[in-house]
Length: 238
Image 1 (cartoon, rainbow, N blue to C red):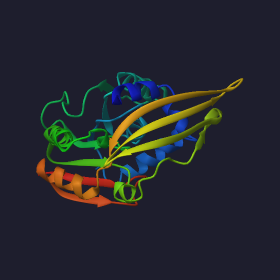
Image 2 (cartoon, rainbow, N blue to C red):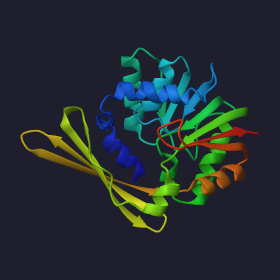
Image 3 (tube, rainbow, N blue to C red):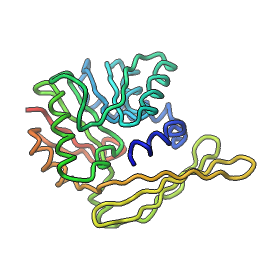
């Protein structure tokens, strides 16, 4: 379901942002506080490049990977259009196609990790991220604020309007600590055209994710709640 969901979004994902380039720049500026200068970065959930391109434009060497091959291809095209190099490929974060210790920083932003629905799958991904980090390297992960969301259990998100008057909103269907999301896109043409995609998430709390990170061998796990557009977990390899 997840790969198909993001394949379907690859052509329009940027329309969720009032100004995608401004969002790329803002997020890269925020993330740069946690990414050392000169770091070689793996964005292992790069999508169409929102974080990867922004970091590349700040001078980082960035490699992208994403479950969606269509998203990874678009990330490369969008990076080239902005004058920066980005190598991106399709892969599962539970089986990253890189050698041990290849990166200074591994990034999984924008609530990507909670697509994995079991502790075993999250642990497998965290172990892979740690494996491709050099000793002393840094893992940076952002998720929704699931501590609050698990308490409130919202059923929808407010609508937002992107370029071209594309209207976006989500409906959430809860099943214990997981939810299925229906993503609605309303495109204005002669009449409104509706596109719907579905994905599933584990509303994993910060405590649950911290415990799994420590089981994966990561150390110095810390959370920053206000430095980025989502709660940000930062941990060290060893």
